Image 1 (tube, rainbow, N blue to C red):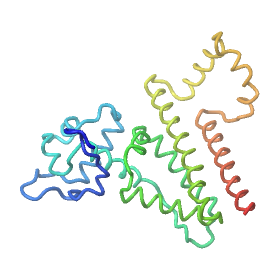
Image 2 (spheres, rainbow, N blue to C red; image 1 turned 60 degrees about the horizontal axis):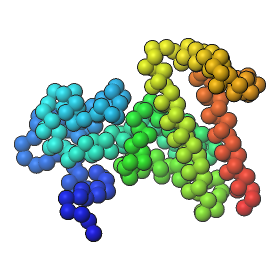
Image 3 (cartoon, rainbow, N blue to C red; image 1 turned 180 degrees about the vertical axis):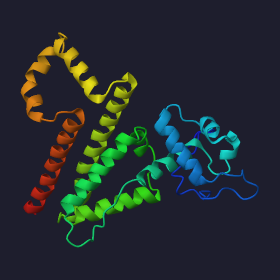
Image 4 (cartoon, rainbow, N blue to C red; image 1 turned 30 degrees about the horizontal axis):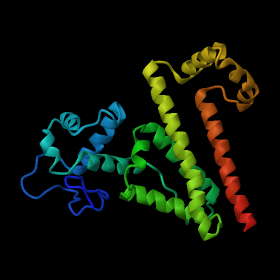
Length: 253
């Protein structure tokens, strides 16, 4: 039994009967449309983050009243879901049916693009699990991923597991990298400066020095002259492990 006054569950802005590209009928605020509002939302989220995002703040950015926005969306959640899908529209999608294209290379490209998207838009990762994420761009990405992984030759029951292994890894890697990048930006240092200072401090602190000493050989073997190179090498190797696992499962039959 639903308690009186409880908020009803919303499935998705994309499933709402009132979902509309242009707005409500009647006199509408001039100069606004959903595309402009969504674009401004993405820019504002990039600049100020998810915690500070509000209808009032967005209205100020667009130089309109907050009430003007409600001609085009019903809630702030609608805006966030629209911004989420717009971000997925930045991904470059391969043609899974293209002649001569290998599924491994296409999967690497999709994974690398998704990682970069999560880092570029640090607000994205909390929203991926909050909404159904069934906008047109997100669905296009999901369909291409599925078609690429199908070409690996896995049995049907293993396709979704393989997709989860790869893209949940990418989600985690990109989310942590995004947080790390935001922390560095707050210090005013470059990534390399921050890394050198942090490593010097933890190498001297009594509680962490031993752990750093135990990892010296691994850090040396990791390679890379910059933080970006180290992150790229770790990501590439981890992704290669996952692809090798898919290949092994295909051979196992």
